[in-house]
Each structure stands twice: as C-alpha cells, then as structure tokens.
Length: 180
Image 1 (cartoon, rainbow, N blue to C red):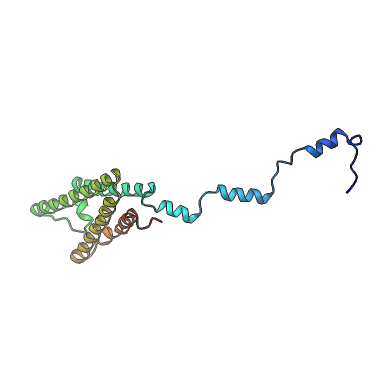
Image 2: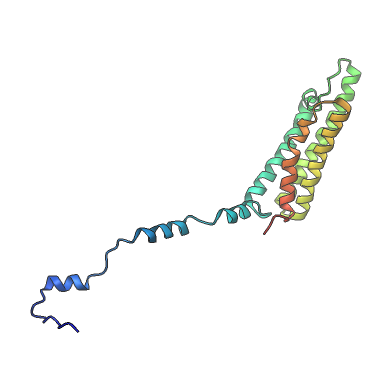
C-alpha cells in the first residue's frame, strides 16, 4: 500500500481537483445511443401506426375519397354533358336523346352523392366494420362502372379502374386485417 500524503502538503487547489465532479462531456457513443432512442419508433412500428385501422391518416384518406364521390355527384348534376364524358359516351345532338342521357347521368350523380355521404357519415360515427365494407362496396361499384365502359363502349374503363384499388385498400385497412 502506498504511503498517504500528509494533509499539510496538499494544497486547496489539489483537493478541489480530487473532489470536483466529472466533466459534463459525454462520450460520443453515449450521445449516439441517446440520439437513436430519441429518433422515435422503428420503421416497422411506424408503418403499423400508419396502416392501422384506427390511424388518423387512413381516416383522412377516407374522408378525401368520400368528398371525391360527392364532387363527382355534384358534377353530374351541374354539368351532365361532362358527367357523361367520364363514361366516354358521346353526348347526343337530338333533344329527346339529351333528356334521356341527362336523366341517366342524374341517376349516376345521385348514386355518387349517396356513396360519398355514406362513407363520410360512417367514418364520422366511427363504425369501423361498416365503414370498411362500405369502402369495399364503393370500390366494387367503380370496378363495375369500368367493366360496363369496357364491354359496352370499348373505352373509358381506366377512368373508373384507376381509383378503385385505392378505395379497396382503404377498406382493407379499415377491416383491421392489417392491424398487428
């Protein structure tokens, strides 16, 4: 055991050095570890949060789809000629035929308004299963509209089939099948 230094030889400055708290600097590895912890959840956990049936992002996307359906319905009522163009139907020249096409476009507009309102109301009242199946039915309606355009008109099917997968995906998320 080494001999102790006598207290008489120790100066007050030397004793402060011994009793002083350690430096506030931390090692770089400690800072990196803290930064990783503070960075938030892992990517997988973040995807679980975004694609959860209770995610606010999914609900916002659902509201957007509902507003889109309402906008299509209002467009059909305001301008039936433009509404008929989404089905790639040539707008007729004769007045009696125009009345018939306008009536059919009004029916499609009423259907779109109903679909949009039902999607928004189901989201608002937070009935998740009903909302999920309404979204799946809305996507099937878009698929059927596209099929009718494809088989009867021969074109215009992609006007409907382009948004059907998005609506179906939102419905699949809302069923809770992707919740982990």
